[in-house]
Amino acid sequence: QPPLLEVNNLETAFEIDGEWHNAVDNVSFQVKPKQVIGVVGESGCGKSVMSLSIMKLLPKGIGKIRNGDIKFNGINLEKLNDKEMNKVRGKDIAMIFQEPMTSLNPVFTIGFQLSESLHNHFNISKKDARKKVIHLLDKVGISRPEKVVDEYPHQLSGGMRQRVMIAMAIACEPKLLIADEPTTALDVTVQAQILELLQELQTTNDMSIILITHDLGVVAESCHEVIVMYAGEVVEQTDVVTLFESPKHPYTQLLMQSIPRMDQEEEVLASIEGIVPSLKNMPRQGCKFVDRCPKAMDECRSITPQLRESSPGHGVKCLLYETSWEQEGMKAK
Ligand code: SF4
Ligand code: MG
Image 1 (cartoon, rainbow, N blue to C red):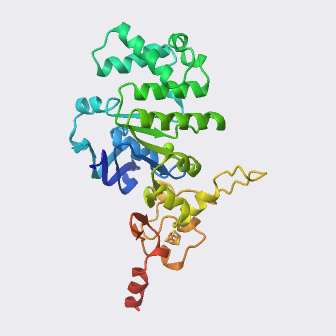
Image 2 (cartoon, rainbow, N blue to C red):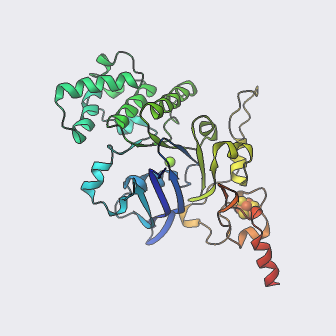
Image 3 (cartoon, helix red, strand yellow):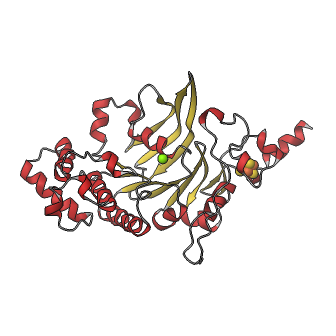
């Protein structure tokens, strides 16, 4: 089955004080039809920049795709002009964000905002749009949609607003939905409901989803494949079962330990010490995780690990799983 989305060697850079720094560095992955891919990592690891790159929504003049390509259904998105890209956005690829209040306009009714995206892509009468909006609200589990359609965003709870955002995203039945931390701002019960809704829609709409999250627990529930990102790079990449059965990268292992566990009486949340290096302070050589890695070796500062298959379909970027650096070291001696 040909992939729906193909990201090849993507490098997205931002300009800081006259210098360009890669926020996404040589990232490659594919999304097949109906597949759910999880992208995991702490904030500042390049997850959102990657999704903005796919949507071609990088801030103009500040961020740019430096290298690589993004193909959707075989079409190179890089080659599309703004007008052509506008047709793809919302219609073929849609996106939902963490905080719905910032993406919903407070001065317009829910119905108005939802019909707008329908009018943008379809020739549809006002009356039919309203009908469709009510149907969409119902589909995302909003009770009394006939009432909600005439309400304003502030009249809804956070969970309902996120449902509205999802309704807006699926209005044009996109083939790919990018959900960037869609449940982070919500309480645990609502989080679970929203994830369930996304899974349901994924099946009924035959949609692929890129689910971006800092929470590996979320990934376990909903994803087929997982990409773990650190400091703009993919550090581990495999199917969800393999990742949970044998996480290889020290960063992934630490992320696993920070998943809240229901079976523990007190929530022992191990957080990972230290912070993701900023773009300006990114090490140019060696492993970018070295300052926080409990398994770091001397070599990790000088030798840059490569993403390699540790078993078929399981990529890891860590010197612990490479042997070539030892050999190179031997040669140097
Ligand atoms: Fe840790 Fe070294 Fe592996 Fe980096 S290369 S993750 S520092 S062991
Ligand atoms: Mg983000």
